[in-house]
Length: 182
Image 1 (cartoon, one colour):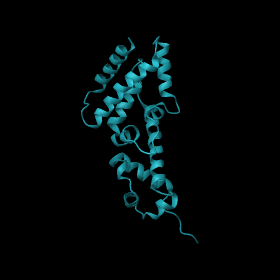
Image 2 (image 1 turned 135 degrees about the horizontal axis):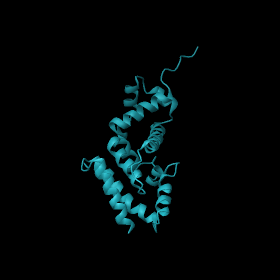
Image 3 (image 1 turned 180 degrees about the horizontal axis):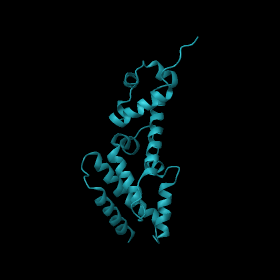
Image 4 (image 1 turned 135 degrees about the vertical axis):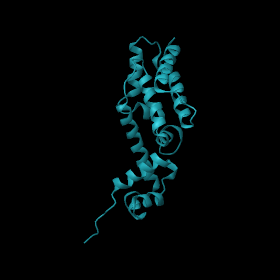
């Protein structure tokens, strides 16, 4: 009779994902995942061909986590791109290591930033349409200008150089939109 598996693929993925959230993606090694999951490395390599496959699974899980984060984000402004920007900056502040994985570091498992932010729900496309509906002449260009501002603020939060409160960030994003829209 075969021995029952006590560590599942989901256990391994969840352990590696939690490690990424808490310690950073570079800390996800077979030995560290095994130690934290309470097993040897054998179950990891039984369900994943190699560490690259596990890392890809962690990356995919992080993308889905970010998409869910965006869906749960509070709507606070009628100004296009502002709620998306607020959620993005908030994600960087709340989930530093996941933000770094998805939007700062470059690796073989990564998607383009636009693809992750736009997601299956078309987050960016909807905001561009919203801006166009408000008579913005070139909403795509406006998005690019504003996104540089948004991404910069989010990256500043990683180093502790961004200490503005939510209401100040909201005001700045709305002002930036109006400035760039002119």
